[in-house]
Length: 228
Image 1 (tube, helix red, strand yellow):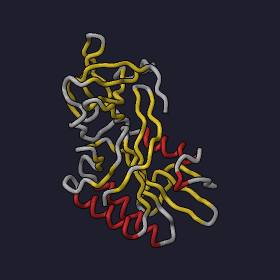
Image 2: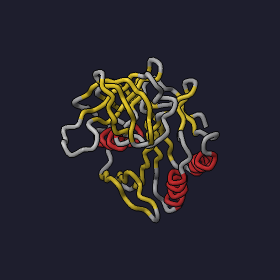
Image 3: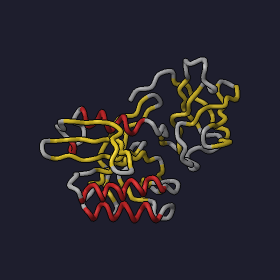
């Protein structure tokens, strides 16, 4: 995915999960944060961030914060892009486990959940739930960075769908480069982690891929090893 109208800034603080104060061209701007997760280890005072300037005069904020440096690594925190990247990567046959699908749809309801994607491939059909990952500790990516009851519910519904014959995928898109490992964040959310481990044992496919990230682009990278 390619961004336009990108500017750099210096992160100051985050009054709430929707907005942040950023120094841009010597002026403090209140900007929209495109991720409601905590991102505390990324959004620290003084770090360099990249923002997309809006052309909409009716917006309350002129900028959206999309990425930030953690040390020397640029991490994309735009929570809207993982679904689009996975969708387009499947569409263009860039994911080995999901090539040559006959049908690919967004936002499909199943029981009490709405999964991100639904696909059909010959006699096979299933749901795909996409999770964007921005948390990294000691070279290992983890999810979630905050407790997620909704995420746990989705995984349990994935197991139910598997019982009915759907060939499902839980796809973790790691929004940073050079990551080689992924595991659930058991310390942060034991229920989600246990549900994910249970789903994997039950035969739900779990995939993790990293991304190539620049100040104005994020694209699918390489498959990442699961540590569970």
